[in-house]
Structure formats: C-alpha cells, structure tokens
Image (cartoon, rainbow, N blue to C red; front, side, top):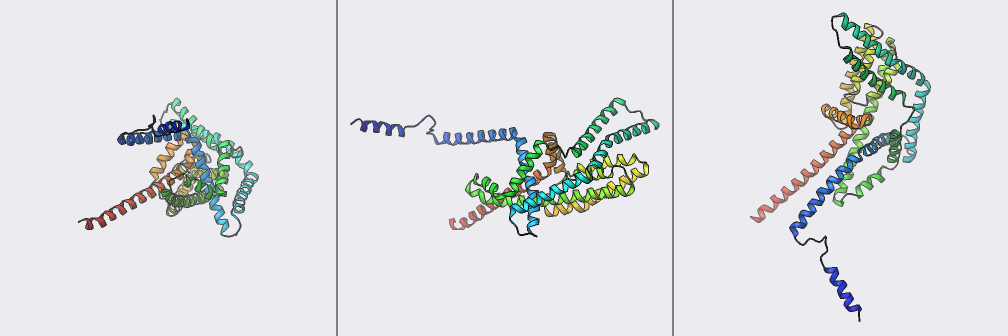
Length: 371
C-alpha cells in the first residue's frame, strides 16, 4: 500500500523544475549564448596554452604530407600496398642521409668550424676600411652587432652541424608524420566524426584540397632546395670559393624559408667570398643574384601555379610572428600554415556564398507566388 504514494511522490519530483531549469524562454536563449561565448573563450585559452604542442602536431602533418607525396609517386611506378610505399620512401631518405654523412659529413663539419672565424675576420676588415675612409664607428655598437651576427651565424652552423643529434621535438614530428602518412584517412575520418553531420562533407572536400596543395607546396619547395643547393655548390666550387660544400648546404636548407632564407644565405656567401679577395667577392654576388633570379622567376612561379598563391608580405609577416612566438620551428612552418588557413577561409567563403545564393534564389521563387 505504501508503494502507491511513494510512486506518486517520485513522479511529482521528476516533473518539478530543478535549479538549472529556466522557465523564461528569453533568459534560456541568452544563457545558451553566454555558455557559447564562455566555451569559445575557454577554447581560445586552451589553444594558447597548447600552442606549442599543436604546432608540433602540425609539423607532423606537414612531414606526413611530404611522405605521402613520395608514396604517391612510388605508387605510380610500383603497385604495392601503401605501407610498403611509405617504407620505401623512408628507406631512401635514410640512405641519402647516411650517404651525406659518410661522404660529406667530415668536410662540412670542418668547414662549419671555420665559418665563424671567417665572418669575424671579414668584420674586422670592414671596420678597418671604414676607419681608413674617415668613418669612426662606435666600438660598443659594432661589438654588439658583431656578437648578434656571430650568434646568428653560430645558430645556423649549429643547426647544420646538429643534424646528428635529433632533439625531442624533431623526433615527435617524425613519428607523428609516419603515423599520419600510414593511415591518413583514419585520422581524417576521426576529425570529421567530431563535426556536425551537415559539415562533414565540406570538411572532407576541404581536407582533400588542403592535402593536395600541401603536397605540391612541399614538393616544389624540396625541388627548389635541391636545385639551389647544388647550383650554389657547383658555381662556388668552380671558382674555388672556400667552404663551397657548406655554403651550398646552407643555401639549400634556407631555401625552405621564403623571403628570409635567401638574404641570410646570400649574406654569408658574400662575406666568405670577400675573404678570398674582391674578385671572389664580386663573383659570389653574381652567384647570389643568379640564384635569386632562378628562385624568383622559375621556382616560385612554378610552385604558385600549382599551389596557393600567397602574397610575399603576408608570408613574411607570418614568419616574423611565428618566429618570435615559436622560434625556428614556427619560422619553418609559417608558410604551410598560412597556405592552409587561406584555403580554409576561401572554402568557407565559397560555402557561405553558396548558401546565401540559394537563399536569395528561394526568396525570388517564392516572391511571385506570394504576390
């Protein structure tokens, strides 16, 4: 007999308003808006907090796209499973690094040790030349400039010479890139599953366009690095410029950084050239200008036609910001990141424009009938 009243009490409690129930529709709507804004702020704060980790993940995506592009090229020749193609690409890359370390490692290492002293001597010669022409620069200012310049050059040579010691960040990027390259559809479907159903098709098509553009961008950049590095080494070696192998390697590596890499490598090349005399210095200027012409009028337009055409000022601004925030890693990934953001914004603009066009067409179709 007690079960009847108890059930009535439980039913009555289940129908009562709780402390989180809002009866006023207006207040309920405003509360939802407030929760959305609070969630956006929390998401932004979490993104800022995890920015370094997110950049490493994006670096893994970029490296995975590079491996994926190589695997696709191998697939055009060998009809083998994807895992084997990825393994072949990694094997070829490893063999190339071993070859470089075996045949050119000792020579490049010795040249890297001589480079800071050569730059310092050129700085002293320049200071003497200024004094001989009646210009008396302040020693403290020049000393600070020299320390900054030598510190930057030392960082470059440490990067060149530190390829053997793989840091944790680079190791994580390599591992993530291999996983992404082995099963790209798995991770793409996982990200798409977290989106609303009506946004998944747009995400799939946008991700496919981003992947294609990223592969072409990296392939063009890799071709540019190889061409510029080999061309620099051959031209400098032909004239007998010191440290030709090291300068070719630095030029090739810095070619990955548009707008910034070429002036840095050119400055180092010219300073080393003038250490062998004025004629050699003028020859290195000629080599730098020739490389700049090849890069500006052949390689860059070829990449821009196949990928995203980015304004140089936009890329340079992104490199400066990313370099200040994340160092060398941010500087290297600024260009691909800007390209992906531009593709995403263009796709969203096309999607919103298509929806607006459909709405206007629907309104125009309804208007005659309603009249």
